Image (cartoon, rainbow, N blue to C red; front, side, top):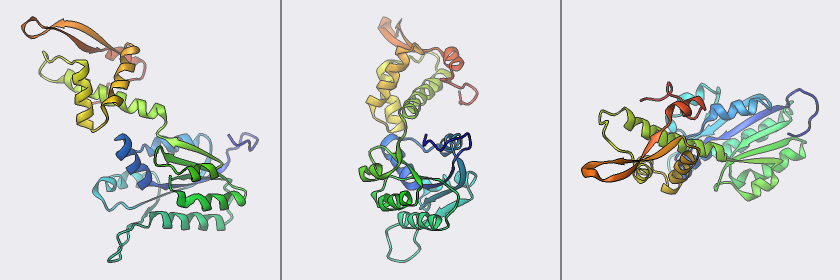
Length: 258
């Protein structure tokens, strides 16, 4: 990616503002960070020297991720302030301090990977580049400073389009699977009922669900068939080709609760 030469992976150190990632995904996409998948992707390209994750985990929702994160890295920094009268968290300040301290140690890492969207990190990125470091910034779309993007050696907006698409596919298929396994075998699943139910249950936008469902129908993973319903009423209902989806890796029967 950066032309270091040879087959040896460049050494990298990683800093994650988990609040930016967690709340950006939750508020804009109703998704959860998949740190494990992201880290696997990084390790395919870099020799990760250290992974540090920063955040205020005192709130219940984000706090539920703490146990899982501790299984990923020993360097979890809980940034909540315990001082009376202080209502601002110190995640950015603490994370910036850690980055500058890391740079001062003059380690062997050639790449700094930082997950944040905050413009406060712009000067730190500039400083790292002056030291000859490559700086890769990951940030959540629509919460990612343009100043920070312009200063980085390279940047990646998250979630990637493929991740977002797979997320909505999963929401639709999980909904259809629950109906499929329910005791009410006569329950018909229609296009618009599916869109509305998935959107309401998961607190996501209907147009996002609609686009994903249209794509599944276009690829013939889901088909519409006309049937005769109550009192002879004709209607179009959805039928999922579960065997084909499992064969193509779209659906994992064993990994889902049916």
